[in-house]
Image (cartoon, rainbow, N blue to C red; front, side, top):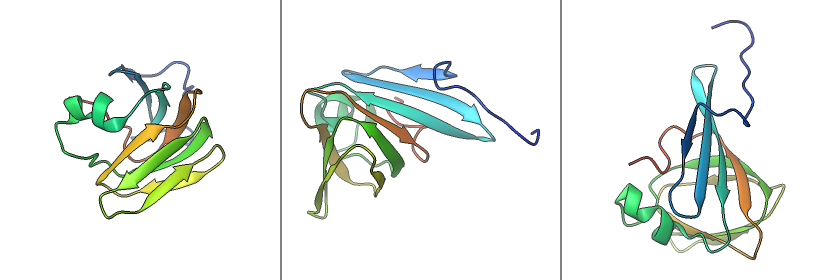
Length: 118
């Protein structure tokens, strides 16, 4: 790897498009960064569960919400609303959905390589 590695998210190396979902992934510096876009009406248990084939999302998410809003409910009972400008870490074992009528767009650093990949 060179001293600097950069890629633009508008030219992703990989795109995944389950229902109401767009995951754009760039490979940079030996890892992956993802831009996740969830449309209004998106819910993990309805749109991604059929791809993931698990009862709840088992990905660990480390990211930053650029726009829109998400509600996340963890299997341990904790709940949170994530708003634009929020950095987040979500442990495996959760469901989540878009809140409102605006797409939720987040940048992800841990789950991009495998999220919504069958």
